[in-house]
Length: 345
Image (cartoon, rainbow, N blue to C red; front, side, top):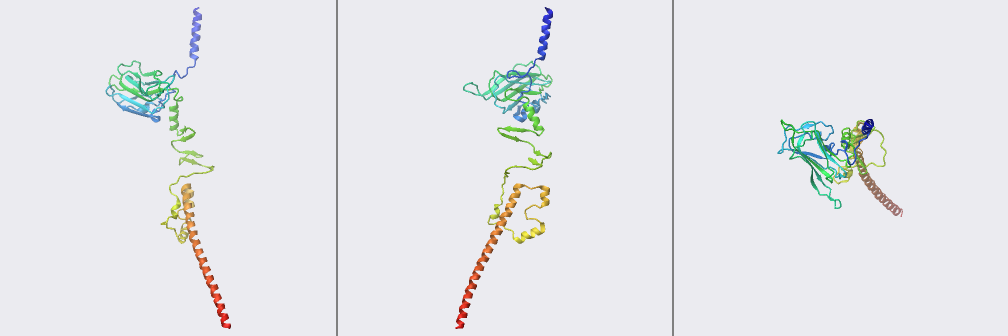
């Protein structure tokens, strides 16, 4: 009988060792659903009171502690506010807490601001106290975690207040990580993955049907982009839209000084290209800015239009003069004929 019990016990232990444990809506096994990973870059984080502590290390997932340079007290507690969190209801469960290596908090308070109010499901907007050790010392050691499922709501703010630590000499506080485990608000390690992508210059983001890139330049066919988008190759599209502030219609303004054709000719002879248009050497070196070049070409077209209008006026004037002269010549010819006939008589 004892052997059977021992055998069953061993089998149970083996089954327990081989059983897979994973995070669910109602149980958080690890930190993968920590909404506060890199909260200092995703949300609004500030220390509103107390001896300064390195906030970035509270949210980087490394568990490397940061310590206040001076002691803390109930009169000068360390207060860390995290704002602008997504308004996702905690539903079946969520967990808040902190961890450290040394000088853990003995007295502290953790609060959350509920923004969920529903006629059907109830709810009161405002601050809720998740954990309050402000008047009694916490004896759980270097970490604290609490399931806040009983505090139903959507929490857009968290406030951690630390009043004392177990540093008996100076009262300094140590903190490695602050966390808000929220399985229904964040994908596993989402904050860490997004921050890593930013650091590696590959941070694409989606908003609806839009895909956008916030930082750095993009290179296609080149590893050294020198603009927001650099393409080393052919760009095939149906249309290119360029935003411009200055267009060439100033050529038609009354005070515009149209260069003389002689001046244009002299510039071409001297420079080998039109005034205001870059030379082939400059184009080869710097390329062409489509917007600016189109404006310059339009300026030249409008100048050509003015030259053509002026030339047209001269031609018309000459034609009118020619017609007038021809009319006078014919009139004179008729008079001469009349005189000749008179003389014959």
